[in-house]
Length: 369
Length: 156
Image (tube, rainbow over all chains, first blue to last red):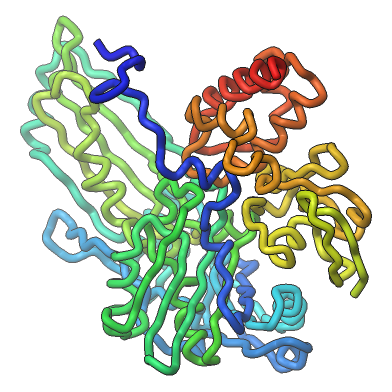
């Protein structure tokens, strides 16, 4: 048996190639990168969960060092897409809300992007952002999972009124009548309500994005804290900014932890890439920790009703799980597949496979990031 | 703007900085030593730990001007040429890192611990490292690395 003392082959202790540079301070994380003639972006975020907004930037634009300020009115680009289509059990496609990188007249969670201030220093950008006048007209909010799931606009708030419902899809896998029959004949059935709490992945390295448009070659480069640069190139290029792939390079250098949160394509990546083309200078955005809490994709937040059937010996006979999952105010790149194909298919875990299981999901959007 | 002069990893530096410049920003942006990281804006994560006059400090809690005249040591300044400091070598040997983002702060805090408490118990190591957060390792191998490095440093 391998005991860690082998010098080669299976069981041998292997030195990692990256440790020397990490231990000597020579890693190359995204925030370590600076481009010539670079500018700094600060993103003004919503303080309201749901509100109509009007924005005045005149005073902010006069601050020394400010290069440009853009809002949703300026940034007319495609919607940030969800990367995985999931159909409801009746075959209808999921309801995917429009997701502008900068809010267009309405903010839908605390942290939603309202404006980007670009300046020659980060401090100047922050000073100017304080002078942006945002007038919020608050709208009804959906902040409780069960309430949000059952809202219709008359009773309870709709996060996207144009969709007519907060329900993204109603999905299942397995045969419900078959499993109900198995549960009915099981020796013992246990029932549980399980709250799988919301969490923030909180990698040690906050997210960073640097957009660098080169006018000479009409070529874009995005440096980003990413676990998934190829998908970001596809989604941002094809769906958000309409940049052909041969003119867009996405570079993901050393990543300081992701825990899934750096798999997604984020608004800030599109904002800095687009803005770099507008001002013909590199644009760097670095999240701080407080901002990460508001703007990183969160995980879980499921409420599940579980029925587990067993025979006399305690062996599983059937598992039925009914889950309501919070998917946030907009769909992240993989919001749709996380609580379906990446969760329902794994519910039996390592245990002797239940005879069958059946899962029904009702997905809901609500006013959280 | 104000004039500041200090020794950074043994090199004399003369710079003009904003009065509100933080030492962490100065090290990263003005000096280009990016081994020192910034992971939070609340002085909690410990990725920015450096030594100022032989004491560990979270460099995001200190103004650059407060380091005027000081000896500042960062992660880039502790190896002996190509030979790793015993603490660096022990982190490598015991897999005390994965993504590497917290590592500079961990190593700098750990060296400070052993310099001031040459034979720390594992409980003392855990207590002392309270101000350094890691999300990858679960800390167990970091404690093993510091324990091993302390013994190596005592033997030298």
